[in-house]
Length: 280
Ligand code: PAF
Image 1 (cartoon, rainbow, N blue to C red):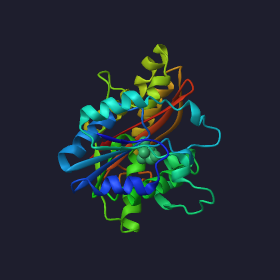
Image 2: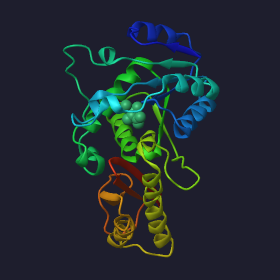
Image 3: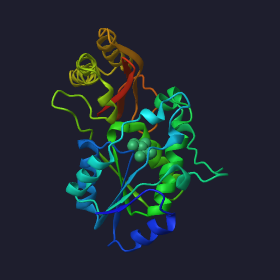
């Protein structure tokens, strides 16, 4: 694997990328890789002749109050894992490459960024779509691979690609879970053992909602209540939102008569976790 170390100019990335056999698949990440990321890299290897992975902890998708420096990082381990998974090129852009002085152009997807994560994390998706658009422009992949764990992020990126006619196919892969059901996330590393146990309320509440749906429940308010009650019963959990929304538009549903996205954000101690499940 060719590793393009920090402080390389975009020209060098383009030169390295132009040597790769086509088609090229891109897996954008913020590093501290886990099985979820590696499932994306493995699928990218199956579906593309070459695979580029980017690791960039994108400052513009964090709130000013977030501790960006505390975001977990382990580049040495990431490089080993990517090598084993079969990636061909690892690009590690720096903030000054992605956001040079006087940077002033943003990609802002409107409606679908308003609810859920967008409501709780103002400006987050503007940072995501801007950096993903820049990664697409720099790498020019035929396909890009994202995890369903960030369900709204995938919906927003699909919208951006459609709206701006970007010549890239978005491939989404299922959430990878720990054996006990916790969705894999770089943020799980913040949990102490007690919080780690408490964090199971997210997947448990989704499973309870799904089982109610499978038994015939179609009232979205009841489905939301089932999830809320399970989360609120856990003393270490603080519910931020639960949602039962239209899978395409992310608008809240009254009845589950179409494909739906159940999703939630929950603080376990100081750690904010998200999880989701698709119904129908
Ligand atoms: O999902 C992530 O890790 C990030 O939001 C992404 C897509 C790499 C953009 O910074």
